[in-house]
Image 1: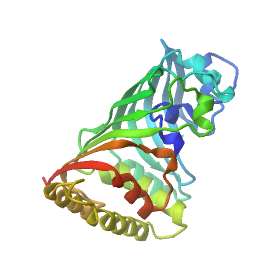
Image 2: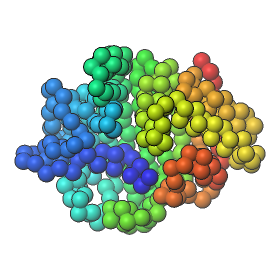
Image 3: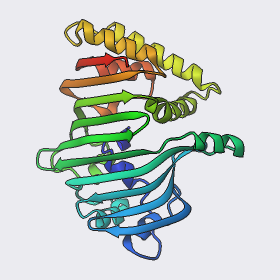
Image 4: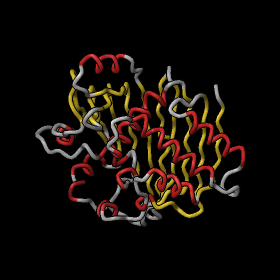
Amino acid sequence: MRSFLLLPLLFSFAPLSAAAAGTPCAELVDSSAVVQHRDGFAISELHDGCAVTNGLFKSGNRMGWTFDRAELKGDDLVAFLKTIASKPNHVPTWGRFSVEGMRFTPLLDNALANYIATAQQWPMDISGAFRFDPKDGYLDIQELDLTNLRLGKASLSAELTLPKDTNVQTLTQGGSVGLTHLRFRLDNQGLFEGMAVPSLAAFQQQLTGADDPEQGINQLRGNAVAALQILPDNQIDAESKKALLRFVQDLPHPTGFFTLDLAFDKPLQIGSLGLDATQLARTALAGAKISVSYKAR
């Protein structure tokens, strides 16, 4: 779970650990087993960052995400990434990233299925930024946006607390990271089905080992409903509970506009969360003030 904490920071750092000949950005990308080449693949240097065009981010044995262009910028980012394996004694204070023309790409042993699934994908753009104040350990993930002109838009923002004056070594050795506020918005016209469902199905399959991803998603939906039913009124008002239950029951095809706002009186310790779906939902919601709206289109 800790690798998720500095998203989009560590999400982008993870594949950038190779050492190869060339420019600093090429040294960070070229030998990566996660970022793979497509026709026209290229790496270029930016002020405070790197850009990659025509790449494939491999997120599993059977799936990946192709993209037209990805840019990553940050506080002395290239130098930081070159030393991340040795756990530098600081964390960048700011960062920005963007990915254009992103498509879900199956990696199956069936050329026909791969082609059809790829041809049916409408490209998506994703962008985000963060700021980190090491003096008080405040991490602000600012509007992580995913947009598709045909399928809708999703955005995520979050506020987290990290240990004061923290560094990479502290975090990788179990540094305490707490979530204090989370806001998620979705305008779904097919975006959820095209973006979230493939990843969710693959995650459930890897987690449970079941051959039928529909069974895993149905189980996840049932666990979420059970967790929501027992939430007390002082955490969520009746209208918000009704809206959230309706949204969960509509999965995997939610319609219209959805907003979820979670505020924690005490920071939720992310590193303590397990992978059991029922326990995860109960723990995440236990200390939260919850506000939800859901309007079908």
